[in-house]
Image: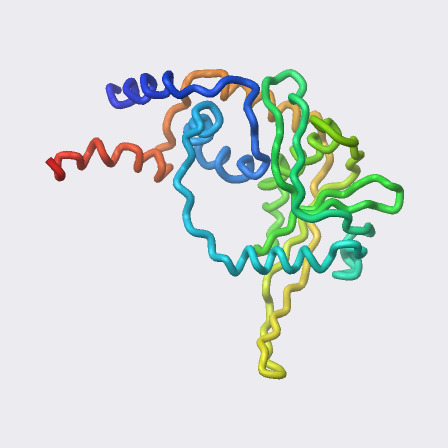
Length: 236
């Protein structure tokens, strides 16, 4: 208990002030993995150490998305929705979310203009295409929708469709002294549900405005924060 009390004393000296900036990409991972780590990041700016990310994935993602600018998604595959890719990896920022002291700021993958002049937001993933990805990334995509429809600045855009384009290699062949990898796309649509998103944001608001949440016993970063206390005597 003393260890936890000391943490609270330190945090009281580093507290950020509202409104708080939320990154949509944190909803799929950090928020679900550990509420304590999420709280520490948003309320106190305490970031988890970043692990090295293989550059090949970023390179693949950038090249795959970049080839679609100003093209119809159906040029990639007829199974994808109709629409012209208008922008890639742009930043978007919202007004304060209704009923909270939070706002959204993050980078989306693709913004697609549909034939009816409304927009589609696409999140591009190089991953195995399982249906559970829909629930995993729902809050992230809904956050982008909110930011586009309630922008802090600039023109409002009406979002009428959200979804994931998931690509995963399923075959490789060698020809002309090159390796040709087949990445068939799969489309997973995410339901538009503004009420669900606003309720989720109220839950996040309650978390951030409350006391420090309990540490997750399965979170290796929570454990890591205390290794110094356990092993400091080794260096004495």
